[in-house]
Amino acid sequence: MMLFTLQAKRRCLAAALCAFSAIALGIDPAAAVTDSAATSATGDAPASAAPVATPAPTTTAQSGTAQSTTAPSAKPRKKTDAPATASTSKPAASKSAASQAPGPYYVDFRARTAASYGHAFLWYGKSSVREVDVAGLHPATDSPVPYMLGHMMPVPSETGASYGDLDEEYLLANYRVYLSEEDAPKVFAYIRKLQKTTPFWNATTTNCTWFIGQVASFMGLKTPWHMMFPEDYVNELKKVNGGRDVATLGK
Image (spheres, rainbow, N blue to C red):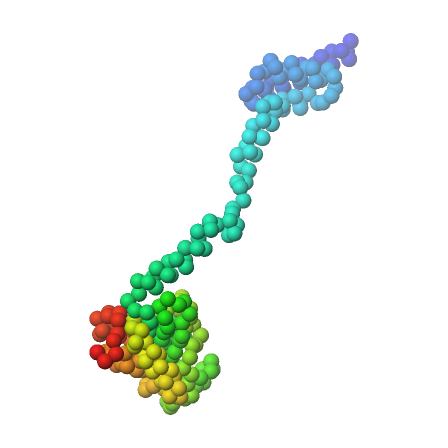
């Protein structure tokens, strides 16, 4: 009898705790007490574990839905998946630009960045051809020693392309002037002659701006004083000639 009374007291105490926990968790106290009593009778789990609510059957479905909405989208296209027109439009555009050029040949006076003042040089060639010839006056070799000595005395020079002459990202200014079929060979021959007959570079006399100025003068263009920064020289060359884009020898 005493054992039965002790078990009854324990069950009542467990039911009271379940009801109190259910109220705190917002669960129906009657349902919580019923579940607790059944669990305590079978001895499968402690009575205090009963208030823990079991997830509803719909939770799994909801979880699956959430996973499907956050699934990664389709893989991005590779470069090879680009439309075929992307690779064929460029040649067509270049041909169109060449057909609209004021002349079949050109000389492009250019200035780019450099470690010091910058550098002035020439591109020249045929308007319908992408390849260009490059000419410019600068100290021989990539060593800084000739460049430093060239501020005090003439030093051996080179008159071809230098590092950065073909890179548009270094370009500061340019002035393109077109030539006729008749005048272009004469101008190009003069450029090559100037390259062969200018063996020295000097910072104040035969420098890069002086070199392109000689070509501009031969083409009949007005030329500013050569003691200017390359970018300023090219912009001034265009300004003093009114931006004209065609040159005719003898005029």
